[in-house]
Length: 411
Image (cartoon, helix red, strand yellow):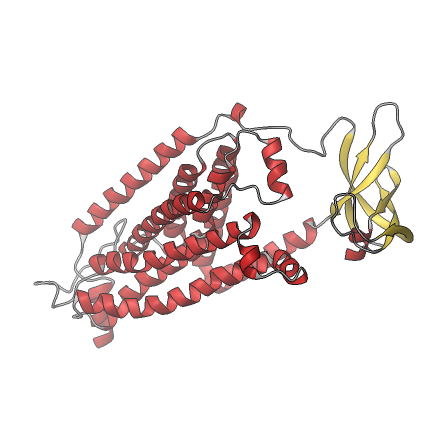
């Protein structure tokens, strides 16, 4: 009976209707403010740049094709290009492919050919048909729809099989996140809205929905939510200050320059700060949920533990989680920026020299700001969880053991 007794205090102990009602009002108020801010920041459809597809000009269309022939030829590739940058040495290739319209032919430069293309590959090509001129074709990309869809299905099935309902709700959370990104955050950036408020508001709405979907409606989840929201706010402030302090303009690559030329009204410096908030959401959510769960489990094991001792015990768990999460942020960047890191090594430049460049410096600042926000969120979430967790005999003067409450934010 000892096991059921300890969990009675934590999970189904004295009905905490007053606390549950108060937290429900607070969460609903936060959600209402976030939604109202989203409505204010929501861009008008005519403010979002449209028809900026560089492959959608007059007479230009994208079609599917299947490679039927690969014929290498010497194109004198190598040395330096006209811009002084090194060129890939080697053969180019003459490609023959079949389309719904018949046969298409086009050439691949040495870099693309060296990357690999074989007979049977499914590709996307540009059909260029200027008025009054012959039709020509250019390679655009490989067709990856089938393998990407298959991987997504495998991932979804495994998540549901292993995590069951929690996994299904987590997938629903991913759908909500993608909807918020594509329908609100990205269009608002393009429409010239201030990126940081957009990111904070969008992230707040995402986290409210995702946390309760994936982890259930409870006081424990609410404590994690409070810590997450504080983390979002701190990361936003740090990102704003760090972006200005390090003079990050957001123009660090050719794609950035193309974006500025395509959407002149976009605030790329603000987008850099905003991405610091969005990039850290996943790890921040992981840490805050874990800390809240740690406090609840510790309270279940020792119902009479005093608040100070509970906080100290949970922080010992949190310090280990901080260390592993910081590594996660660094490894995630190292993996995504591998090409840049390889170039640094090939150029025999010191990391200190390259770290101050716009492209690499942006990622370093993003990682550091995300890590700082993450570290600060741990004690904040732990404090919220200790405050809201069911109290044991030393913390509560009276406690009837019966009853349960399944209200909107029950423990």
